Image (cartoon, rainbow, N blue to C red):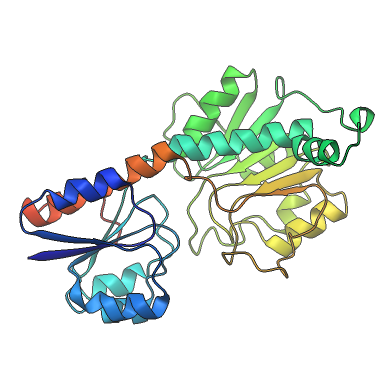
Length: 309
């Protein structure tokens, strides 16, 4: 019997897919404490997680029978992949399944920043008709700079081109034929909006800090729907407070859930959301069913799909 533990939130369709497979025993638990996860882990052959579960060395050591971890989503920085490899545990993700959802959120942030929508909503609920102070700008005719032109960045570029925006991108891999690639300094100095879409690793940690923010237009905005830590949070807060850039929108943080002492909290001009990038019904279903398909392929067909370690 192959025992599978579905942690965090997994779509019902995926749970039902796995339960129908002969030889699979499936437990869906998305409210376990770390202690409970550690206690339960020795019993399972496979585990599906999202962003909430951190698979560090201690949790990996607890997985005595563990052969496969699947991240139902793309980012895998919450898994100690090298240590998992040492222990012979395959780590997979489900790339591309939530890319449109993340791109839509980034675009939504751009509209919110351009038209001051959060402040407009707040003042209206307070009974204030503040129309004269809420004049915004249009996205049409502006330049979007995308850092990372993978599936999410490419989707966002297509949406923004349809709005009449010019799109430029910086990436170490330049394989998109319909995107204009530029160097980082050119992107920083010419873009009206910059959107981050790269993974978090040793090369991208603090990729955007005070020096890079200082190269941006004073009227520019930066958006991070990728991973916390790519933009230095204190430097970003200071840049907005000091008027180095106009504002920012952030969906991801160095520590989640965010604590009150996070430097971004309470800064006017910075729009914050609680890691909503892949939080749509469609993305959850796509990522979950892809994870289920990969578990079936691994244990029933001896196939390793989308391995990242």
